[in-house]
Image (tube, rainbow, N blue to C red; front, side, top):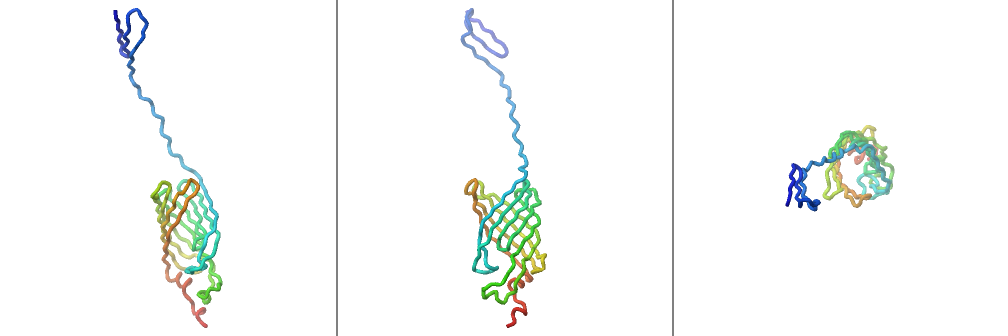
Length: 215
């Protein structure tokens, strides 16, 4: 007294003349369409500014320091940016990155070198007063990931030449820096830098002319 009905899509077994009480169905699975992955949109314009205070040598090569204001700023469009650094031991610098890459930066830059004025330090008494110098050139920077998530590091090279007629020299610099992400809103960074200068620069800032060597 059992009847069975078989179709291509289901199988039903139940006693005759009684309502169906149990059933087993087979349904062909159909693929579920996946939602398209979001595409990366350009980040657009961004900017930041930092204000603070720092210490600099009283003059280049001095072992005594003075307090100066610190100003840092950056305006960027995606990976292109204009950054202002100041005050560093040279004074202040502005860099324009023209390469649309997050790992490699390159572009022109300007550097403002602080003036040297009179001082009570005996080592400068016979050295001339120097006006502020304006130096132009280019920079090249390689950006790397840090040792921990959120950290970053970079290796930067700079080539500058005086365009203000103060020292008429050339400067080559190399800098290695590292930034540690402490929290979402706070990071700590540091770096080391070395410089190479030519004879004109060295003579202007560290030499003495006959006018100033005479007693």
